[in-house]
Image (cartoon, rainbow, N blue to C red; front, side, top):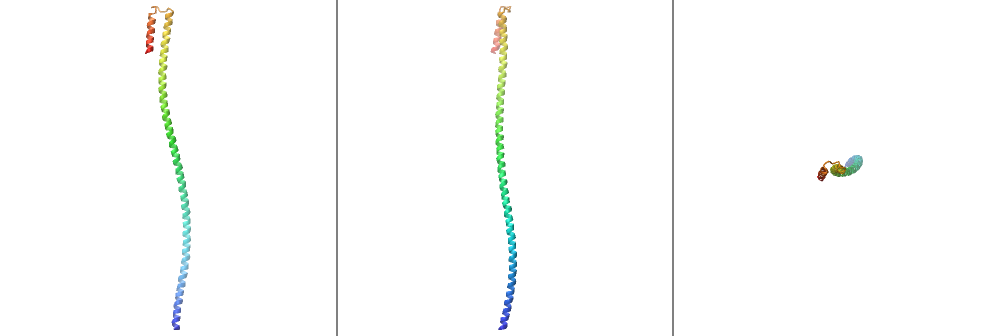
Length: 152
């Protein structure tokens, strides 16, 4: 029975030694896994920092894009305003040209009237001074002709 107990004790020692080796291996594996976990945590922190930086850059780009859109709308509004002003100026120029043409026609008409009146006055003076040889008939006819041309 002692022998049997010795054998059982030897088996228990072997089991204990085997368990001791497994325990040591598990401890080594645990240390290795801890190191890997630390590395993964570090990598995660780096990735989180990169992600945070990327989010910040995206926000800056969005703000820049919004600013650019606002500037573009402002420029488009200015362009539309300038186009309206140009159209208004073109209309005013056309109106002024028409008015100018009308004034030129009036000046021409007034110039013709002035010439006719000067001619009438000249003929009247000739008639009054007795320079008309035919006794005023020619002057009256000439005055009538000039008046008719004025009416036209």
